[in-house]
Image 1 (cartoon, rainbow over the protein chains, first blue to last red):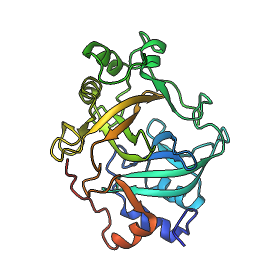
Image 2 (image 1 turned 30 degrees about the horizontal axis):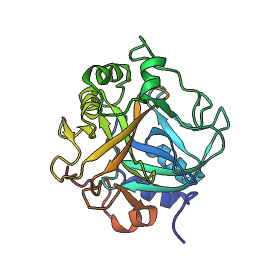
Image 3 (image 1 turned 60 degrees about the horizontal axis):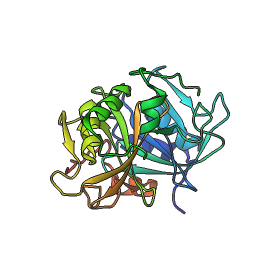
Image 4 (image 1 turned 90 degrees about the horizontal axis):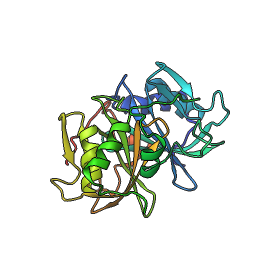
Length: 137
Length: 137
């Protein structure tokens, strides 16, 4: 049987210890992809604790670069991400989470956080350079 | 006609100015996805210059966090990524590049950089904690 989350804590720790947390705040990059459609839903950061929580609970946890804490995606909205499988990249600093989303991933209630094409970006954010919206977790 | 790369320089600059370069070395995260299959091929960082080069040439350029310079994917191997479309996320700090790869994306000659499942990670890298391989561009 291939290893899939949820995993026992000792295996999750073993896996977490092999990653290269070389990004901001000692994190790896996590790309979230819907398992059934292959749609990319979001990208976020994971520190060692978020990796272990994701692997042991089977629900995606991330490190918030702005709030400097670990959070479970959907802890407020209920729109959790059930992690079906995890694939690690060649240099061990990025994870691909293959998930079943329990609702829309984006705080705008769009299915994916990736929803601005280049035309929309030029029009919708006209004059608003380096604009940032608050993320509802 | 929807805007797709390659774009004229003034539009590429306008788009690049709207992004939130809040990651390490003033970058956004770029997730690369094969347009025909939706397979995720790699993830990397892009500073403003890499965004403009990608949008104006139609080939993926990134910022190397280790070598501290902009590089074109495939500049050595020939395995370039032709960018068909770019989708920007809700908080403007990540791009989804929909590409046609001109060869394998990974330096291991695997099609995708995401190719280690959890079993392989436990076995293949046994004892090699926080191991990093050199990336061939």
